[in-house]
Length: 194
Image (cartoon, rainbow, N blue to C red; front, side, top):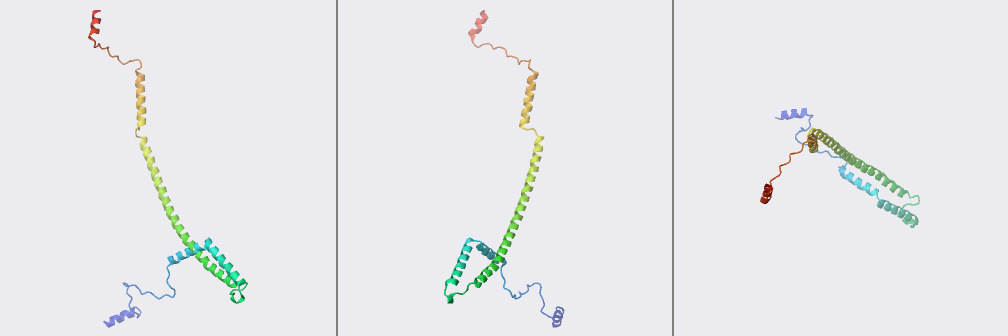
């Protein structure tokens, strides 16, 4: 038995036997795992905030306070002298992070727009297909109705027949019924006496 296990190890490279019915253990990664969706949502929130008037007002106030503090404060309390190199560095750092976050948010919006356009295109295709189908059905019904006698057609034919019949018998009057004897008993005797 030990010989068979040794042969198996020798065939597989001498290491432990790999089983296909079990998942491999996860390797340790140097970089931490992150959720791309969560990061994308965060970038959209940051980009949305960077595009507001509130951000511009707060950034303007901070820069004004920074400059006033570093000009008017006593020399020992100033932390960024006149060319304001630290302020320039902070603004450059903010811009270097804002640009990729805004681009990421725009890419996500483009992806959503692309999906929306695809759905709208498919809906439009279905609508066009349905419209064409209904148009063909209506045309078929009209063609079928063209062969069927309609109420107006039958009425006009009957009116034509009545007119033709009246034109054929203008000289012939309908026979008049004979006069009826009156019901008055005295009236009949007077005529007989005469």
